[in-house]
Image (cartoon, one colour):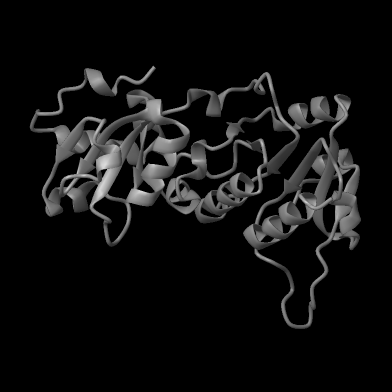
Length: 258
């Protein structure tokens, strides 16, 4: 349950309330995180309308957002709480989904799950969340060394898709993968030393697609669990490897093909 509404928005320290949400400690304490930009906010308002706690804007917000509490601030105040170089003039305070940090999988996992192991760049994590949502993945399982999916840059890169599917950031991710395999899920691991055979992704009703750290790739422990190790074929003389977000997009797209 968010504590945001219990705070005094008119106090002299009220701007600090928003700035504190840039840290995980601040987000956990307040039970809230920030989303910037009209399109991203609208995306969340459509999918999770009850999660929007407050709109902070330099002007009157769009009519489709006028059902929420609104706080008008100056451009200077907006700059002080925005995480981006050129603020878009509108920010939403969103209720934090605390199960994001749960060690338990959701009751209904769904058909396709994206697994991220130690993907540390928040821009990559946010982009992968956005791609997974766009390609109708059910959820994302993240190792505890991944970038926080609710950090400002992750949320910005996800373009409002961060609440469009379930997510779990947990040190228990390997145990969850093993359990999903026992339930019949097929684990495909993206690996530079794997086989270039995209048919391994096709027609899988229950699939876990694993992507690893930008530099080190997937751990040996996870690779041992894999049912198939997939290499996306590239011309290595021109580019040694793909960015993890690009690799993930290709693999997720292939997994959606019949």
